Image (cartoon, rainbow, N blue to C red; front, side):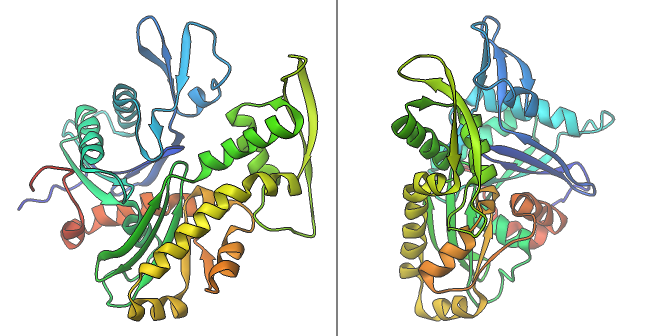
Length: 341
């Protein structure tokens, strides 16, 4: 078997954000997973942050879309276009070898969804595509001893999915993948304000509220923020003040579902590995883990120590990078997404 040097790329293709790692360079790109297209020609006019700024603000002729939903591809053509543009952005022009790509996928996706990821990345210009489960990539990125016979538990809260896995001997022993994560939290804030204030707000505004004053547990410094939207009764723009307690109330249901999933995963865990987790605790990764108080509420509900990884957003893509750096070593944990190796 021949291992090519250089031109290897790791991708964390997330519902909310796409990160790219190039072997020898590190993380070279972190952009929102958003594409803006011209409806008449179907051509992309903006990708990433520029396209995200257009969400909810486009005229009739332009459509700004998020082509990933719940951790899987919702629009194949747009994902292909996104990856193609991002790969051309980060690759040196002098390189003519098509890259070998390691891409992370949710552990709970179907074989059809895995093939869809592989095909989209191949069509976007990859030479070979290898898939790795997000919890494994996150654990490698954090530096957990995944090859040891002891159990390590990872909770990765992304934009579309929450991945909960117990890892030992380079494999996932138990895993629960739920399609409740950052997007569901944003939607819960949208619905709360609609019911409570008859105020309609956009997804980006809801995300801003979550980041600014959102929390999982009460704190001594309760905050409030002004939220702008459309009054559903008068049909006119309106501003309301929203506080931390209200956002906690809005987030109660999605957080409850994540906690239930964590409990389910722990119940499925073999006793020997469960006793390891009592000692080593749970590691949290992913952008959704940055919600204030979320490690503390999971610790309170499970009775286990929970720690937030350093730079949780980057853990999965760093894991794909470490896999590229020691490809032969990690080869056994990769899959070709439906094709034989």
